[in-house]
Length: 217
Image 1 (spheres, helix red, strand yellow):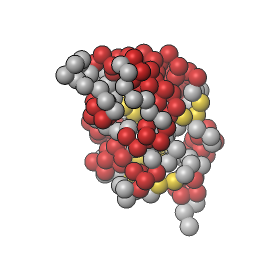
Image 2 (cartoon, one colour):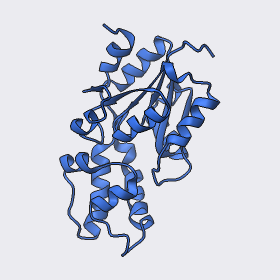
Image 3 (cartoon, rainbow, N blue to C red):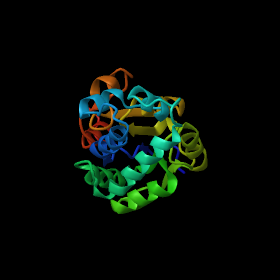
Image 4 (cartoon, one colour):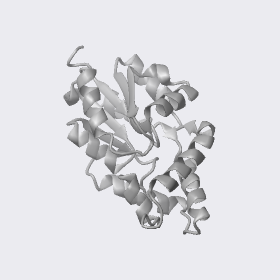
């Protein structure tokens, strides 16, 4: 591999896939079953985060009454029942195409379970854009850092020429540990204010990445 070739590692949920409302609605189904307060989109984006178990605790789940796996599995079932109804963020397809034309290597690194990740990428007809897609071996959305480091090594990715594109503070943390550049998009699962607190560049939409990476001023 050319060490000077530029690379983009994409997060999936919330970054390329517009699944924010589905995620909020799915967790509200689980909350409602337990008569816990429901989330609106602003509260969701201000409270969602990793580890997922701690996010569940912040929104009211009491794991002294039931184990984390029970509401987590209910959420997963509700989410995957409707994920095919989601679409890509506006301009995502054009942006992926532009970076391919410019010769960028493109990968996906996600906290989604591997087979589900591959399924949803294929549902959106964009699987072919990526040299490799890397997810987790379970549905509990733990940190993807170890998977990311393995991706760098096995795919011979030069991290100094790599940009990690995500929509959460966790994506920034992963990019930092992988020693990659990071740009965050304020259209996903966390508020713009939270993203800016990382100090990483924050853009309003995915198409802004083309100007930043391909045509820097």
